[in-house]
Length: 93
Image (cartoon, rainbow, N blue to C red; front, top):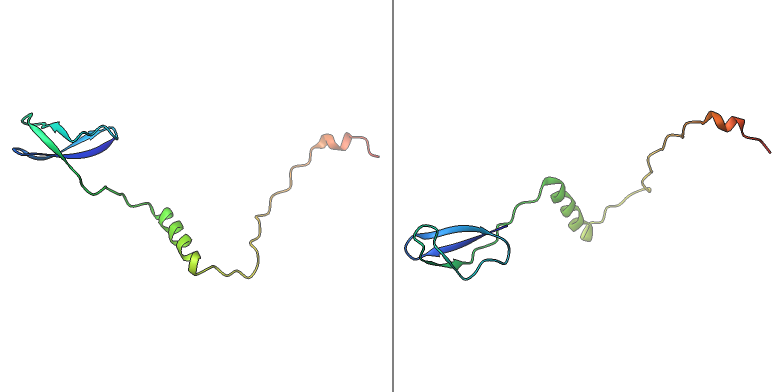
């Protein structure tokens, strides 16, 4: 749902929440019922969270300030799988 702003000549501006693409150039006023014309406003853009902001900043910085590393990153050590006692009963070559 998107919030659209309309302005009635008698009552002033008001907002309507409609599905995207369903806003016509004119709608009836919510107070007096007269014709209200649609007003185009700036989009309401929210600020992304801190993790996304850090990721975008790191991506932008990597274009002109690449990170220098001295050695490849090590993969975390995986624990050995537990031994299955049934393997001891298998025939040996």
